[in-house]
Length: 340
Ligand code: TYM
Image (cartoon, helix red, strand yellow):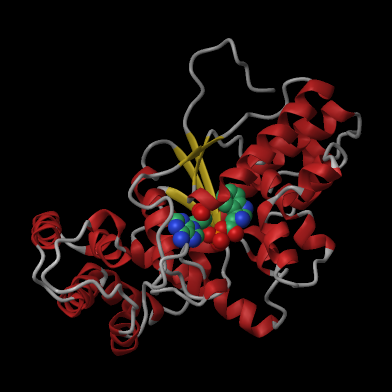
């Protein structure tokens, strides 16, 4: 049955995806993963590791497999509870790729040409393939396949969710109310986490602090952060300093306030802030670090979690795909018999 907009308020269904293209950085954690964990009890929730999206950049099969496993370990260690949320790998739900094709047939080229992920890569001279170009359509299918209502993400993904809403709207207009329109969910404190150079934190800019980074390596990165050259005694506005922004993410609230007061008073060196940041970061992620080590030692656990997650995900995606196939005139019973 299509979702009924006149009935009682729709249930909250949360979905988000994350690419396994390297170890997670603070932008991923404070922008997205922390929200996944906060929302996992809010309703039905689905979180996946976007290996199909990662194929547009990771071309070594063994590395991709290792990255997917690392991503799953990281997510569970950080607090994602597989009993509450379905945690799975994107490519384990083939229904989504079929749905991508259905959406592709209602996707204007101009819409994709305006998407910033594609535009940015192209402007940096990275050769674009059709996978990169049509990436937002796959992302739309990811979201629509689960009737997601809420998509927790960082600011950089909001445009893609707008594309998803556009495509769902067009499909619904043509074929009836098939898809549920999702909304992005952002958190003020982490919507755009700055990197060590003040730009958006991103692997492509080589400015990340990673969640499970080796601590001495992380310390080196932090101590090398470039700061301005204002005299020691000058009061400074904490609001426009990326070092303070990073410190705010990991420091306990009273220490954050004390640091803000120190900025406003002046008479301190950035070296002190960096040292405080090193310590606060190590403390903040220390419990997750221990959990990760324990999980990594338990050989079959992650595979079992991902398998169970995929089964739950396929059940939902199969039903939505059947609905979409039927609506656009494809179905001869194939879609409805496809649930895992
Ligand atoms: P990805 O893997 O680049 O990033 C995962 C999540 O981390 C957030 N993020 C940030 N948030 C704040 N500040 C930053 N500096 C920062 N860097 C990254 C991202 O906004 C994202 O929420 N296309 C998606 C993956 C995806 C997806 C989906 C997401 C595929 N299908 C369906 C939601 C729904 C991506 O590449 O995210």
